[in-house]
Length: 278
Image (cartoon, rainbow, N blue to C red; front, side, top):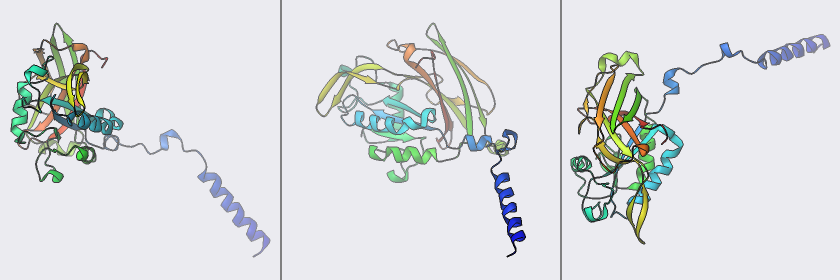
């Protein structure tokens, strides 16, 4: 190879390297679209628990730890709907963890009284023979992750406030896929009030802890046991009274659940604190 030819090739390679290393202006960089940012469906975990259930605190800790990296994309609600020996009996329930509404939801699952059990967006679970709940808490992180990997279809904008023991909720749900506007399912919106940091008894294998901290406890519905029909894009405004005397509003949040009325599947969920300091 001639020397001049060799210099020409080397000069061309150097020019290519200089161009490839040149910083790309912000305006020319690839910006992910909204669907890419929103990838990953939010998860509602309904954890049915009981004061007398010695495995329930273990299950709660396991799923709380698994959910932590996902931030507000995973929302856990603990429901006490059983008065059996492994549930929450009145004599061991000074803070009113048990709720008749939670009992209604638990009865619908037809779980034969076992605790703990959990649902994940109320979807049928292959690991549980197609049932909508799992009674095997070691499987719960995997069930949660499976829902997280589904595409997010909707977005919920939720704002709440409280005054004189009345909760005012402003909620709007929109689709993230405009092409699906004409094919939306029959949607309903549920509003739940939950409370953190309730100090009450809890059984363990080693004995009973009288000052156990119960978190994300279902307290009451704010718009009926099944919620109300909802039309996408419409502002949903609701004012509801706090009916449970033991509630400390400073520790409460509202959970908004958008679900398919026919199948029961939850499509999106959001959570907002009453006081902004949870």
